[in-house]
Image 1 (cartoon, rainbow, N blue to C red):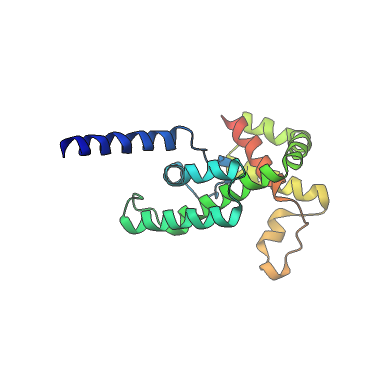
Image 2 (cartoon, one colour):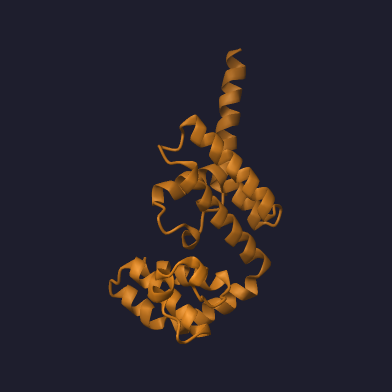
Length: 188
């Protein structure tokens, strides 16, 4: 009996360390702007192995999202999310899965976006190096991205309108993801 318990504990410990040791992290540029680092860490601990499977191409978005939502829901119901709810933890997971999968499917689009944005956002990157607030930098970067498609686009004017009246240029999500990555990397 004692031998079984020791074996069970050792097996559980090895499983836990092998699962988390190689688990993919959540790219910080994918997190909702209102999420905290604690919330991101909670989600990473819950779904790191799922992110690994997405990154290697073994899981597509729909299946991975379903598995992640189930784990998050169970953790919230069990009270093991430090008071953080499903409404914020699930979007963190969904965004990470979507971007990891998209990067895997379209690596050239992300590489091209990075080259373009290093030039387009060079002045904002310098301002972030000099201490610009990250929220302000992200809004300025998004506005520049939209203006690269429509030069007369005004971020604050358009986002102050009701959604049905907005005239927002079509831009690939990789542009916004890469912009946040560049700004986050600069801030470090």
